[in-house]
Length: 359
Image (cartoon, rainbow, N blue to C red; front, side, top):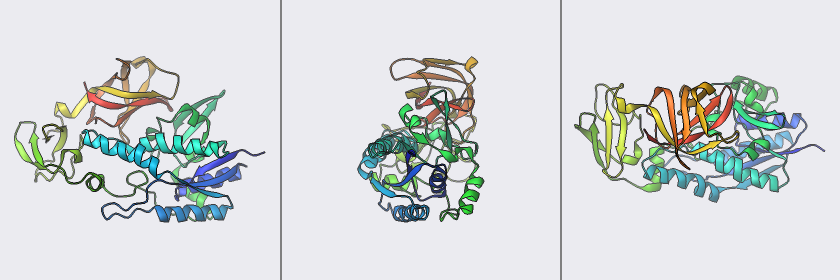
């Protein structure tokens, strides 16, 4: 009897081809649309109904059953509230990582297994390797599309019960294979913006959810007042766009103080406070066996934010139950509290942690 797999179908080409490939490989495939967010925000259209219709059409064309899982309550509680609380604390969260951790590879996985699935599958650009019944998350063949940065907090159980068949393909190949199979979504543009919410800018989303914020001063690295901000929570470390501080060389945010309601900026790209090679991490999580220490001899690389270049790890050691000290061989630009640092050894994802402060 063929194994049952529930494919999270978002209405895009990646998950559509995922369902088709698994069906061809002999799996008993069911398509599932996760209904996580349905509201338009601040005048920005939420495309959930369009995505639902596209996913359902692909399922009908493939001749597979189609389900809807309504996770709106869980998504609000576990992802949106986390995002809002983080910004209110002055840190910059990554909702995509939390969405994967809590919704796709926990809530969805648990319900799918309860409903009789042997596996879940997604259209992520990542690979799950099985070596002597030991599972590893590894980077995608298409390095430009690799999404392992957002997946490092998957549980080991999720690795055992998940399939990611397009991780071995280039994006161009995915579209080509979808066209070959006359899949309706073959030419659909990739979704962008906040996970499941759409293309609404984060500032507009925060304004919509939290309301207008108290204005305050923008001060440069020479302690000079250079402007006013419209709310500390709207600014993130390293930001250079949207500061509205006049012409000349661009300013970069290098710090902010929630209590004093001040945003600190500099025009000096080499300003020390804009760079760091020593970070404190919290909520460190390892996909492999529990690690207590990593040194430069282990050839471990760290990615301090999505799209950033990997940097060699000099030392990673546990300070106490929740705090770890990370030393890098070279300083990285604008490491941001709330963002994740993900660790790699060759192509294997070891795990990662969340930046709590700069040391």
